[in-house]
View 1: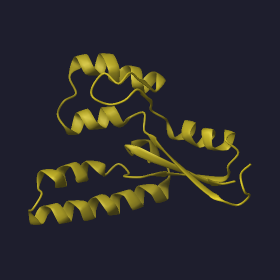
View 2 (view 1 turned 90 degrees about the vertical axis):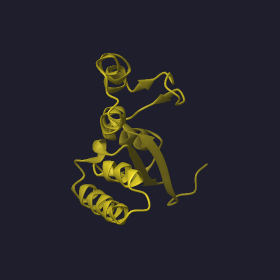
View 3 (view 1 turned 135 degrees about the horizontal axis):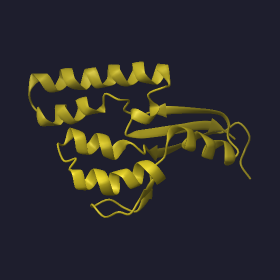
View 4 (view 1 turned 180 degrees about the vertical axis):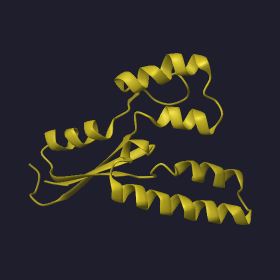
Length: 133
């Protein structure tokens, strides 16, 4: 039995992360869009076919509901990277350059602003549900 008042956090992958990832990496082909990307957006089911494990990708509402169904109180949802996570990808391409630090700072600022608004959670590649037992 869980001790009352304990903080619990669980992470989930956004259902829309494949669209973003393939777009940022310039790898969103018509075949991927018509196949696995559409399947993940519609159902959340990912078959592990492209070097990642079999997984369920969540919507923000779905992840929050799972927290409630698990018995958590005071459930809050956060987008870990926010919609600016592409800045981090760009920073990786500029590693060792002055621009990398600026891009990372922009990513952090974008993530914080988006998290305050709450409506951008699904735009984050990863989400965190937090609640109390």
